[in-house]
Length: 77
Image 1 (tube, rainbow, N blue to C red):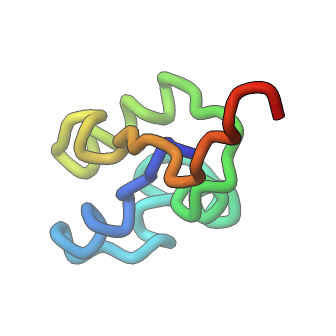
Image 2 (image 1 turned 30 degrees about the horizontal axis):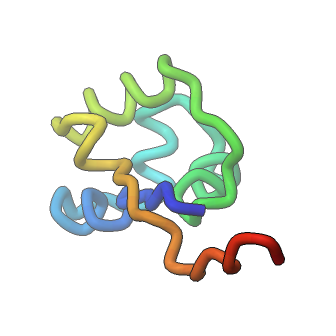
C-alpha cells in the first residue's frame, strides 16, 4: 500500500512508548499497533486528531504517500 505510517518516528522523537501513547490517545495498544504497523484499513479523524495533539505534530508527520514500488504490467496483459 502506498500510504506509509510514521508513528514510530514520532514515538522516537517524543520518547514515548506505544503503551503510553495509546493511553494518552484513548485507544488500546493493540489498535495502535495495527495502525502503527500499517495494517489498518482506515483511521478515524478523532483518532488522528488525538494522535496529533499528544505527539504535537501535523497529520503529514504521521502519514505519507509513496507511489507503489511494484511495476505496472504492460498494457494488454
